[in-house]
Length: 443
Image 1: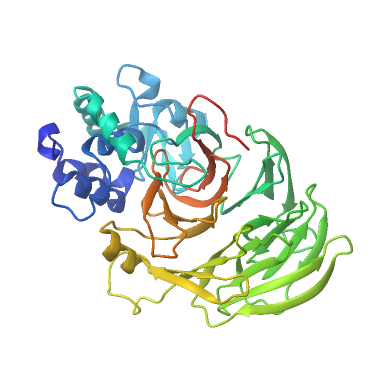
Image 2: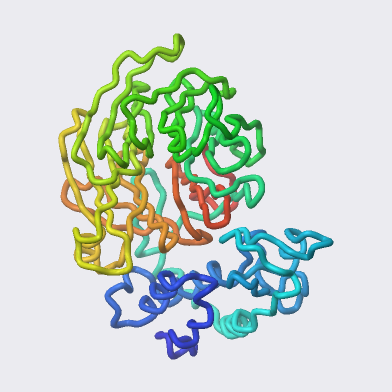
C-alpha cells in the first residue's frame, strides 16, 4: 500500500505543519513514499500508527481528539499548536480568557481559537482504514532491539506524568537507586523534582538563585551509586552536589566556563562536559565530608560537548559534540558527532549525523546519548521524536528504532531492565515505556 491508496500526500499535510513541525512532517511523508531513502523499517501500517499517535491526540491530556465529544474537539491556538477544548478551558484564566501555550509559551486568547478541521478530516479518513493481521506479523518479524529484551515491537507507553505546571521546560533526568525514584531538573521555582516510580511527586528542592543550596539555571542531573544527586548549573557556572533529600553537599566552580552535561561512573566519580572550554572533566569526591579529592581534565579539544553518558558495565564514556555549521554539508539539520571513549578515555569510536544517514539511509539527528544495561549505545533524536539503538558499535552502528510513539521532543532518557524512562520537553512530561503494555515498568 502507498500513500495514494489512503489519499494522503504532502500537500494534504501542509496544513498540519504548525502542529507537528516540518521535520516530522517530512519523515512521515517520505516514509510513505516507497522510493524514499528515509523509509527505513517503517511499514505503511506503522506510518499510519505514527500519524494516529503523534497527530490525533491532545499532547496535554493524551486523550484522542474526537468530533463526537465536544470537550475533545481539536482546537487551533493562535500560535499554531493544537489542544483539545477541555485542556484549553482548564489552562485558561476564567476572567481574562487567555492561556499560555504549554509548548511555545505564547499568550493566546480563548476567543481566538478555532476548530482544527483538517485534523478532524484526517481522523475520519484513517478510521475508514484498519491494519490487516499480516501487518502485525510483519512488524513482529522485523522487530530488533536491546539485548535485555527491549524491542521496537514490544515497547509500549505504560505511564506518563508531569505536564505543564508540575514540570516547566525540563532538561535533565536520572533514576535514583534500586527503588527507581525519578529525578528531574526543570525551570520551576524549585529546580529539582523527585518522583516515585508511579509518578507521585515526593519532594522538590534547589530554589532559584545563586546562594548555597540554590540553583540558577539547571541543565542536567545525575545520581551516584550511593544516592547523591549532581546538577550542572549553567547560570552559576558550577556543578552542585546534593543528598537524596536535597541537602547541599558541595559546589564545584573552578575551572568551569560553562558546565553542561553530567553523569557519574560506577565508582561515583563525576563526569562533566564544558561546552565553552571543550573539555570533559572527571571529579573524585569524598561525599561524606563534602571534599574534592581530585579534579582533572580527562578529554580536551572537544567541540561544544553537551550530553555525556557513562556505562557502568563497560566503563566507557560517550560524549555528544555539537559541530559548527561549516563542518558538514549545509542543511537545516543540526550537526552532531558522537564519540565513545574507553574507561581510560581513549577514543574507541565516533560517528555523526551525516555518516549515519549515508550508512542506514534513515535521516537521523542525534541530540542525546545513553547506554543500556548491556552497554549498547542509545541515541535520542529530539527533532523527530525518536529513540534509536546503535548497538555496541564494535563493527559499526546497527541502527534500530526503539520508540517513536507519543514523543514530541525527548531530551533525556534512562535505560532500566525492560524499561526506558524518557524525559519529553515537548509536553513537559516523563514517559515510561515498558516491554509489557498491560503492566507497570520493571524498575
